[in-house]
Length: 74
Image 1: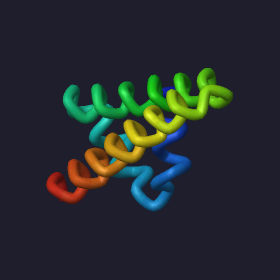
Image 2: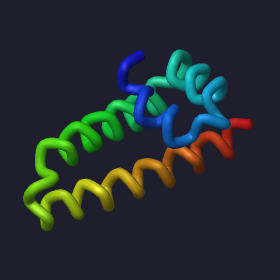
Image 3: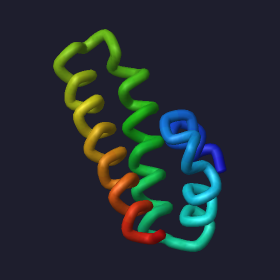
Image 4: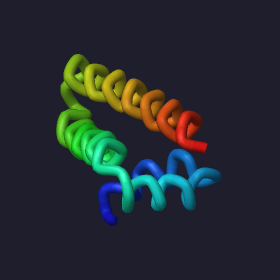
């Protein structure tokens, strides 16, 4: 589950729930994969401040979506 590494680092207190949802829910898995792709893109575009900020914003939005998803699934 390499796509989970950045999310688990960010939300370590939710690791069990993240892993469970990732394993069982395709919609949650897609959100996690989008987050991983955005994280990789941010690393690639760090020197371009405008693009990097766009990816930071996308990552924040995906993290909000992940937290909302986890809160609604408990």
